[in-house]
Amino acid sequence: MKSIEINIKDALSFVSAERVSEFNVAASKGIANLNETKGAGSDFHGWVNLASETTQELVADINATAQRLRKECEYVVCIGIGGSYLGAKAVIEALSNAFDAYTATPGCPKVLFAGQNIGEDYMHELQTFLADKRFGIIVISKSGTTTEPAIAFRLLKEQLERQAGKDAAKNLIVAITDEKRGALRQLANEEGYTTYVIADNVGGRFSVLSPVGLLPIAVAGHDINALLQGAVEMEKTTKNPGEENIAETYAKVRNALYAEGKKIEILVNYNPKLHFLAEWWKQLYGESEGKEGKGIFPASVDLTTDLHSMGQWIQEGERTIFETVLSVEEPNHECVIPSDVANLDGLNYIAGKRIDYVNKMAEIGTRIAHVEGGVPNIQITIPRLDEHSLGQLIYVFEKGCGISGYILGVNPFDQPGVEAYKKNMFALLEKPGYEEASKAIKQKL
Image 1 (cartoon, one colour):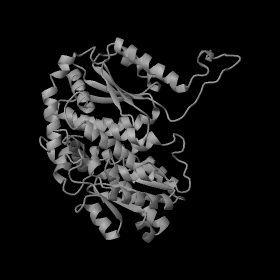
Image 2: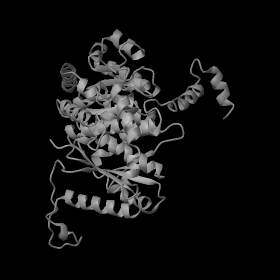
Image 3: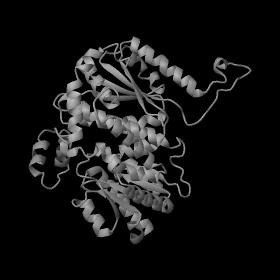
Image 4: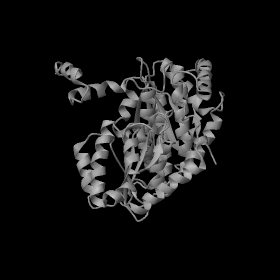
């Protein structure tokens, strides 16, 4: 099978190969840290060999649980926030038919998402939609007390028990949580839910190749063995420093560009199915690197759609950006542009061409224009949108993130800033234990 590839020639027009090589030592040290479980955040390195260490017994068990839910449910609601939903959402969106997301067929339930926001209208509309449906729940939370998923689970659990009966509901709820501790673990043990473990050494944004991502992806009908196999291949090829290490190359080039004043990285795709892959990538890099006053700001666009909104700014705005372009080599379907006798739209010059041919020319033309306009480009080519290629891409981005964070000199595996808003929110909600904080914050209003 073909592997994903990286092309940095349109970045080397802006930063020299010699400048990139200045990061060799830091990158090699970062790789060693990841391989040897050393360095800042080393207690969260469990993702590094996660794919290769996932047993066939676990995969078979996940597939069996997925098959049970597929048989019993029209819809399965995956409850989680951040890394507890973005990875699964990214893979499912990339692999699924774009127009059957809300049309269930027997034995093939659709995966819906909740607990990723605190939208009252969203939750009301979801519950109304599920009112006459056979549904199940996958609830993902290490503690069981994270506000957004906890609210969603409380509401949907009550609805499921009311609609299906309490005993039946127990077989339709799967909890992915801490092995021993936390409110969700306690509830799961008391109710007898099927459970899977979120390992202590795997952070949420690195968890897509664990049961956190694998179970919802399997429920959606996709091949998690192939996903893991793609990741295993990249484990091997990115284990050691060198020119063949695509994750190292990516990490070094983006840091070289950052050192030269390119503060914003735009992840670009030319396939709308990759929209949520970009959302997952933004959390991965934003939460891993954005600390201590440092870090490239991760943004994304869907092209050519966003050329009609963001194209002007990318072409001629402030030159503090660079692009990483995801290019899918071969689409999964074929659609040919027909000829028209009247030719009023003037498209006969491309009649007989595949839509993907036009898309590729738009991609090449845009890359040339942006480079000439002062925007460095990194290109990552994906053979096709399938489980194997996505497993490769996910692992390369994860490994590149770890290496890049160590080059930057931060701990890529914590997120201390995330707690600031929570403390304020709990104080405003007058959560027990936040009495003094409540008094203090109300004086600021």
